[in-house]
Image (cartoon, rainbow, N blue to C red; front, side):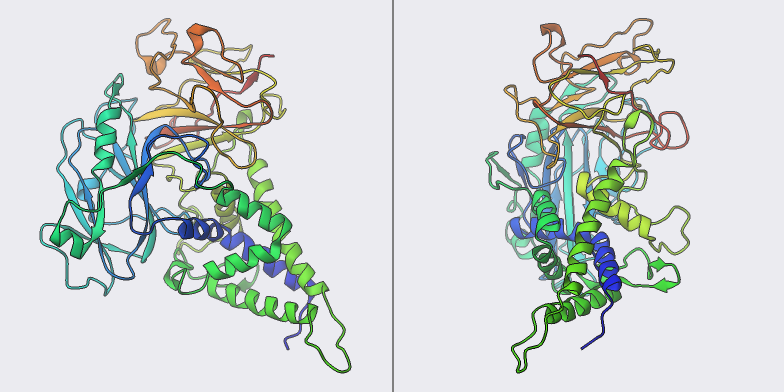
Length: 516
C-alpha cells in the first residue's frame, strides 16, 4: 500500500477539483440530455434549470453531439437574419472548426460597428443566405464517406456541445421584430445520422418542447451541494465523468501538454491517476478490511481529501466574487479560451484552471470575448449586496449622471446588449407575473432620451431594477427582481474589438445605484 502524506492528499484533491470541475457539470447535463438531437424550449423561464445563467435574449437550440458511432449531418436552412453557432468541448473551451464558410458571422451595417466576432460561427447578412448542410465526423470515422452535397467538417472530439442562438430582433440600425422568422428557422434546423439523411433529408428537425419543470434541482446546485456537503458523492461522479469512455483522452490537455506548478509538471492524466491512487489508498486506510488482530482505522487521509474538495469549491466561488472591477462588475477576458495570453504552447497555469472553473460555475457555455462581452454583479455602487427589498437604477448615458463625474454610455454592439436578473445561488431566471426576464437594446417601447442626438445607440437609457412594477411609462425599462438577494448579468453580443473605450477589455458598465 502506498504511503500517504495528509498535506499531499489535500493538495491533490484541491487541484483535481479545480481542474476538472467543469466536467462534473457537463457530465450531469450530458446524462440528462438527448444525445445527437437538437432541441430547445418553446418559451423561457425559471423552469429551465439545465444550464447555468440561462437567458431569454435569443432563441436557443442545442445538442450534445456524440460522433463515436458515426458522423451526423447538420442542416442549417437559408435565413435572412441573425444567428450564431457555438461549439464547445466538455470544459467550456470554444472550438474553432475550419471550413465553415457558410457559417461565418457577417453583421452588415447594423449596430455601432466593430469587427465580425471570431470563434463563433453564424450568419447575418440581411439578405438570404443559402442552406448549408454539414457532415460532422471525427478522424478515421466517416462510415463510408461524406454524403454528396454536404460539407465535411472534421471535429476534434467525438463529444462536443453545439449551441445555436437565433436573434429575436434584427439590428438594421433600428430593430426589426423577427421572432416569427426566428422560430421557423430554429424549427427547421436538422441533425440526423448519415443513413437517415440519405433516406430522408427532412428528418431530425429540432425538438421544441414546452417549458415545464423537468428537474427540481439544477446540475449547478447538484455540484454545489455535493462539493460542500457530500464530497465523496462529488468525487464518485467526477471520477465517472473522467473515465476514458466518457471523456476522451484527446480532450485532456487539449490546449497544452503540461501544467506548471512550481517545478512540478503534471499532465491531466497524471493528475487523474495520482488522485485516484490516493483516493483508493485513503479509503482503504479509513475503512480497513476485517483482520485478526483488527487493523486500526486511519481516517485522516480521506478527511484531507474531502477537505481539499470543499476548499477548492470555496476557492472557485470566492475567485469569482473577488474579481470585481470598476463599479463592482465582474468581467473576465479569457472566457472560452483559458490559456495565458501570449503563451507559446498554450499550456495552462493554475490561474487559468481557476478561471475556467469559476466561469463554468457562473456563465456556462459562454461565447469567447470576440463574440460576446459578459459582466456580472452582486452588489450596488457602495458594495452592499443587491436585494429586492430595495430599488435600483442602471443608467447608460454619454453624460455624467447620479452625481458622478464619469459618463457610462451604452456599450457598442453589432447585435444587441441585454441585462438579466438571476437568483442568488442557482443563477436561474427570476419568476415574475409578466414573464419578463430581460431588458435589451431591442426591447419594444424602451424609453431612450435622445436629447442632443438622434441615434438610439447614443441615447440615455435608465433601467429600473426592482420587485414592484414602476410607473406605467417605464414598464419597458423595468427589470423584475425577487424579494431578497439577486444578481445581474450584462451581455453585449458582437462587441467591438481592439483597444477602444467600448472594447471588451476596456468597457466599464455603469454602477447599480440604490434609490430606496
